[in-house]
Length: 293
Ligand code: NDP
Image (tube, rainbow, N blue to C red; front, side, top):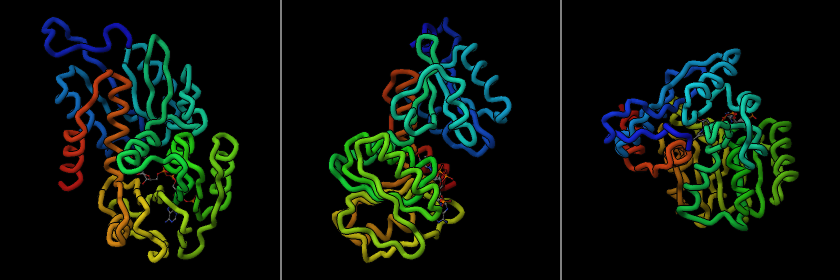
C-alpha cells in the first residue's frame, strides 16, 4: 500500500483518512457506502467511502483526482465499468477477459483494475461447492453474467451454458468464454420455459428479474427441471429471497443469495484497499437493515 493510505484511529496525531468511494451516475441510491463504512467502523479504520456522482464526460478527471489525492481505490458502477479501463495503468487477468472493472486499487502509484463481482460470486459458491469440473447454467449475458461466467470458468468449471433472450449477446458471451478460458461454452436460446439439462450442477440468475420493486418476478423456467443436487444462485441482493431461490429451496436445491455476493465483493474491495479482513456479518446486517427499512 502507498505510504499514508492506512491511518489507524488510535494514532491521535494522524488526521489523514484513507479515502475510497464509488463513481457512478446515478450514485444516490447505491447502498454500498453504508455497508463499507460499517465495516470500516467495526475494524477501527479511519477510512471513508464516498458515493460520487460522476458524469461519463468527467470520468477521466475523477480518476485523475482520486490518483492525485492518494485515494486507496474506488468502485465503479453504472455507467463506468467499461469506460474506466482507458484511465487505468493495469488490469487483473480476469478483468482483462471480462472487459470491465468495478474495483480500482491504487498501489505504488499505479491504478489497477479488478472485477470483484465475479469473485464475490465465486466466494459464495465455494462455501457450498467447488466449481472444478462442474456444469454451470447462467441466465443473462450482461455485465453480471460476464463477470460470473469468466471467474467460474477460470476457477475450473468444465462447461458453461449461457441462456439469454438476445441471441447476439448470448452468443458473444459463449464465444468469449470459449476463446479466453479453458471452459467449453454454449449458447441456449431463451424463448419459452427453459428446461435445465440434467447435467446442470450450478444454476445462476444473472438477470434483473426479481429485483425490487419486481419482487414477484419469476424466470421463465420449467420448475420441474430443478433437481435437488443443484446449487441455485441469484444475483439479486434486494430482496435477497427471490421467487427463484424459494422455488429451488422447495425442490431441495442448495441456494445462494445476491446479498451474500454483494457483501463478498465489498469484503474483497476492502481487503484490496486496506489489507483488512472485514466483518461479513456487520456488512450483511447493515444491508439487511437498509433493504427491510
Ligand atoms: P445488464 O443490463 O448488463 O444485463 C442484464 C441481462 O439480463 C441481459 O442479458 C438481459 O437480456 C437480461 N434480462 C433483463 N431483463 C430480462 C427479462 N425480463 N427476461 C430475460 N432476460 C432479461 O445488467 P447487469 O448484468 O449489470 O446486472 C444484472 C443484475 O445483476 C442486476 O439486477 C444487478 O442488480 C445484479 N448484480 C448484482 C451484484 C451483486 O453483487 N449481488 C453485482 C452485479 C450485478 P438481453 O441480453 O436479452 O437483453
